[in-house]
Length: 101
Image (tube, rainbow, N blue to C red; front, side, top):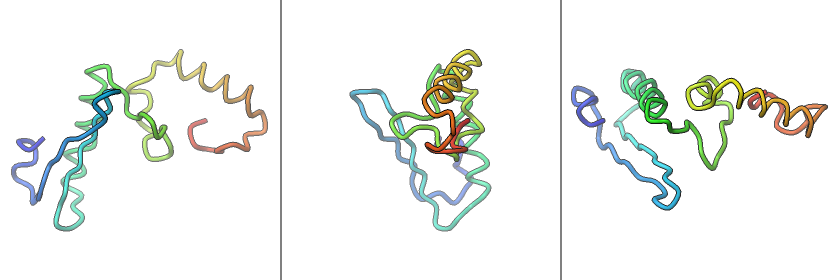
């Protein structure tokens, strides 16, 4: 990641996580908001994670921010099953409406 961002005004790149369950996180510090850094990092992280059979979310769930990339770590069969379980458990869609389904 440092190599990928070498031409950007990045202060630090730090990888960390939960060793026991394999959750990895990347924290990239910049001096001020920089859309160029975001554009270099976000697609790369999601694609790399998908290629290595990882998941784009872990203990915090998918939420709204990563809804558009769930297909990179869950196949259509799994997504259909999740949708069916959600409909069965919450037919009126009152629990976390619009979060994923």
